[in-house]
Structure formats: C-alpha cells, structure tokens
Image (cartoon, rainbow, N blue to C red; front, side, top):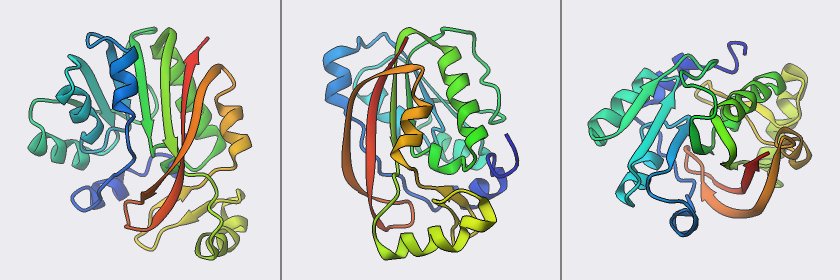
Length: 214
C-alpha cells in the first residue's frame, strides 16, 4: 500500500467531525449468525458498527482503524468496545480467526487497485473458510457533480472515479465490474443498493454485498 491508501493524517484531522451512515442489515445477521460469532469491523472509524453489533448481543466484536483520532473518539463514545489502531497493511490476527468481517465505506478510502487487493487478501486470510464478508460502498455516481470530478482527476490518479475532496482526502467510487473482480475469491450471496448521505452530507447511492469465503 502507498501513502494514498493509508491517509492517516487526513483521517486524524477529520476524526472529530465526520459522521458515517452506511446501514448494517442487523436483522439478517441476527437471523443467521450466532451471538458468539467472532466479528471484525475493518476500518471501524469511531466504532458505530461495532456498537450496533454489541448492542444487539454479539459478544466477540473487534474494530480496527488506521486513525488514532477515530479510535480515541470511539473510546469516548463507546468505552465498552474493543477498538484497535493498526498500520493499514497487516492485520494483527491469526489466520481463520473471524466468522464475519464488515467493510463499510472503506474501499472508497483506499484509492488504488493494489491497495484494495491487499485489503481483500488480508480479510480473506483472517476469515475462516465459509466466513462472511459484508461490503457496503460507493459505485460510480451518475450525477453531474460527481461525473465532473471523475473527469477532473482521472489523469492525475489514472483511475476514473478517484478524486480529491475539498478538505484534502482522496477517495474512490467504483466500477461495479471492478468490485466483483475484487470479490472473485468469494461467493456472492446477495447484492443490493441503498440511498445514504456521505460523510460530507451529500446524497449518494451505495451497493451492499454479502459474500462467503470459499
């Protein structure tokens, strides 16, 4: 991963101000996943998703994030959670350790193909065979505001859909074919979409995919 994929300074700088809103299909998990399942929230931010799992009775939930600022905010908001800072490259866990991994609006923060492949490789390593990966993220948006910035930054970053935010972060919206290529080591169980607001308050469409490790 290069510096564009691990934007620690950016996320520390905005840790106190960003709000994340991707929904978690909690009833789906409750219907099919026992409360003693081992759950990893990769890119946990300030712990919103981890808190939702714990509130619903899950007992073994761990969140990891590159931002010390986000982890500190989570410690204040949710002092009962197990939130850990990591280097963004290697997860500090053994192979096949987790039953579930959630990845909510994380790929958007890792702009390069190589960086995203590395994330998927690590997630696959720590998920047990048959473990579930839940991904929620941004496809390419059709509106003119987004299309204009895809065009503006395509030469600089070399990928249509990567762009720089006004406050300095570099993010990516995704061609769905690329997403399915990333998930090729998994079996897709279901796929849907939803409307959300981004961390900067803009309306956006997201994709949500549940997949099983082969």
